[in-house]
Amino acid sequence: MKEREKIMVCVTRQRTCERLIKVGQKLCTKLEGELKVVHVAKTGDNFLGNPDEGEALDYLFQISKAAGADMTVLRAEDVVDKLVDFAEKNGVDMIIVGEGPQSKGDENIIRQLELRLPNVEIRVIPA
Image (cartoon, rainbow, N blue to C red; front, side):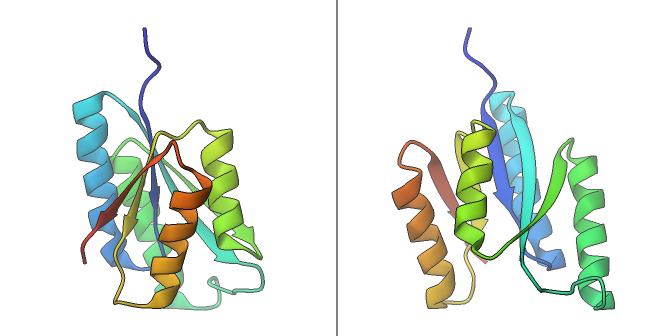
């Protein structure tokens, strides 16, 4: 018997990431999988001092919980390194990321994930 499909949803500090969690939830239901929601804050970022960002993360925690997922907030100098590490340690089969405004940074993160996790399916959800 195959282990449950493990799906990781990457979120930022924006309420709009709710859509990514909902996509992950639907896929988990369909595949009878396990959902993990992850946010990586750059070392030195102070999101607790920003009420909007703190509220957004709290909101995403609530949405994650309602979707039956654990939400993990991590800190790291290198966001991609931390996401790759988390995916490997948790045996992730699929990663869901949002498509941002056409910024090179987002495309770079997605490309790096694809290169470093060749056996993991990466799904980019349009904005």
